[in-house]
Length: 236
Image (tube, helix red, strand yellow):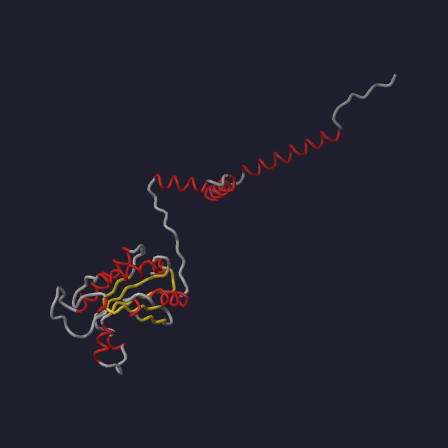
């Protein structure tokens, strides 16, 4: 009577199992011979956590607020030609800002604000109408990421009254007052504040009447650069 073959797994399955075991051992050995980059591993793990758990970013924001970590949004620099059009539209109906002059130069946009409409003579305290106008302008500037500078200017006539000993001190104090009003309106970046006194008086066209040249000299320039404020600080 011929022997009966016992039921079981095919013979090739044993060879296949041996092959898988050898491959597994090979990869384990290969992994043990490599060094793990902890930084990349944490980055991969964090990305996998965000994909796997949709609320991971919200949880991180909550944890950050619990530790009083402020999250500052990064605003992008706005094209100066577009910004010039927006400023002309926003300032057209304002009784103070409509008197400002907007210059689009090669490397910057300059909004020249007449000091006579913002300040009392030889003073750096903003009048009420000047405060309202600058608060509205600051509301526009706080939405852009461009570097903004504030430059004070004065006419060549020496200061004869008031708390300031020179035109330079007066022009600097007025630039600081304008920047402070922007900050009160929500502008959070740090502008570059400069006082030029009457050093730029020669830039005003000599063909204008002298009274007009003196009026244009008494101004505060809001200078908007094409680059983002953070980028300019990192390059300096």
